[in-house]
Length: 350
Image 1 (cartoon, one colour):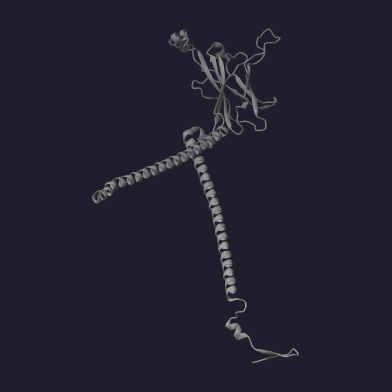
Image 2 (cartoon, rainbow, N blue to C red):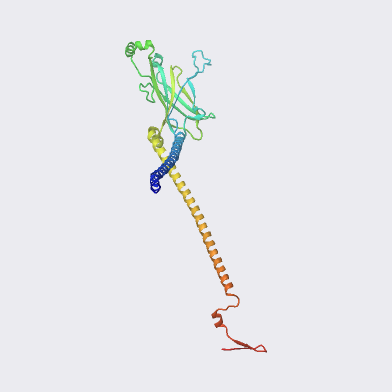
């Protein structure tokens, strides 16, 4: 029996060790899971703030770009009209070809105040004998405000340019009859199939550096060709902006500008957030320190008050133990004997 009772604790000892090991392992696993969960939550919060700051920085840069950068180019078709109510039977056309063009799109002005623009007119004219004999002709443009007042005007002469460049001189490119016949024979299949046409393209620069008036902005433009014999296939008005300074960098280097702008906004917002967080932590620390100092001072006052009360209670207990008739030796030594007489006089013994 003694041997069995001695062996049983030994048999149970490994199971106890295994149980403790399992408990420790479970504790370690739980703690590791809690740490991993905490890390995941912290990473999610940090990534959320980074994404929010990045989105805010991108939004700020996009808003700045949209409000600061004007439209780089604008083009529209030009449709001419004539007056035909003339009294003279010699001519059917009573006026020069004119066109009224609106400089508004979606209730917004095409021209930005303070921005220089180049305004040019492109003409597609048939290479006909009438246009060849026409010679030089003038093109006039006038800009008007919304109330009808004239803002600016310009008159330019026109000529044909094969590379769509601008010029201030006039007339079509001269080609001899032999050259015209050879060109017709060479491009005869293209002419017959309709792939190409016998036409010339003229590019006329109307304004080279036009800036809109901030007080009287332009709303419409009137184009007039000063010839009633001109023949035109089609016409287009082109407005190009000449960017300088920051606008030049934003327009010609959009990716680099976007990277610099978004990065600057992100750094500024991150610094602002970090400073605000540090200030909040400092405020909370000061509040906690104030609470701690207040509690400590209250505890010290309570301890001092309790100590004083204990001293008073101890002194009162000692006085009760001595009794009212007990006198200390010092008091006895200080007492001096004296005699009383009937007339009220006293004689002190020295």
